[in-house]
Image (cartoon, rainbow, N blue to C red):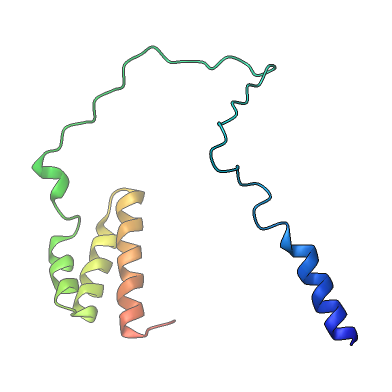
Length: 112
């Protein structure tokens, strides 16, 4: 009997809340205006055009190692990426090669 009363109570409590925030059918929309809002700042400068693309942007960073990687020769690709990392002159190229070495190590299950 207690379970039945509890079920009826819960059903009665939740019955009126299914459409509490939904507008009535045919009701006109209500506009809300903030009176204390600051005016929006609009940038009058035109949007900058995107840069142009050229073929040099599509060149791979490590073409030989990338070919080995594509062929799934993980050990050969890792060696070439290691050579590229050791011969790199900037940090960004070293970081790219290190990332690729990590991917090769993951495929080789070399977790050391």
